[in-house]
Image 1 (cartoon, rainbow, N blue to C red):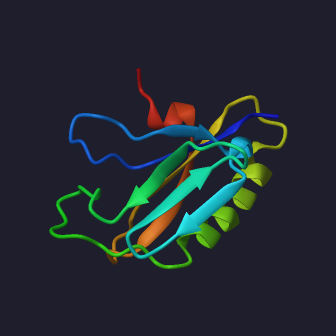
Image 2: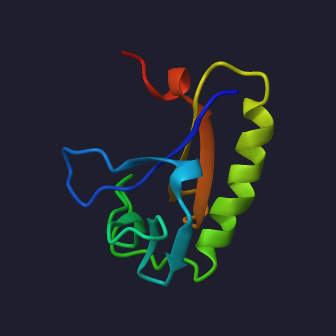
Length: 115
């Protein structure tokens, strides 16, 4: 079965966000400012989503839903179903939908990377 990764947002215009293998995440925390992930027993915390990191031509900060970490778990379950029997890794990533609401998307590596 393929691996599932979470691609976080970046606060830097010319840099991509962190790429974390989903099965290594054992702790999620969410607030209206951000969603962070870590492994139990590790002092390293990774910000997956930050309200100020949205580009896409939208102005100003976009508060993150307080339960956005639960939305990640829901989308992760969908990605696991899609990845069954697949050899291609799946990537989940946050962003704003057409209604300017936070949402998680899932795509294969080949759909995201055209290298």
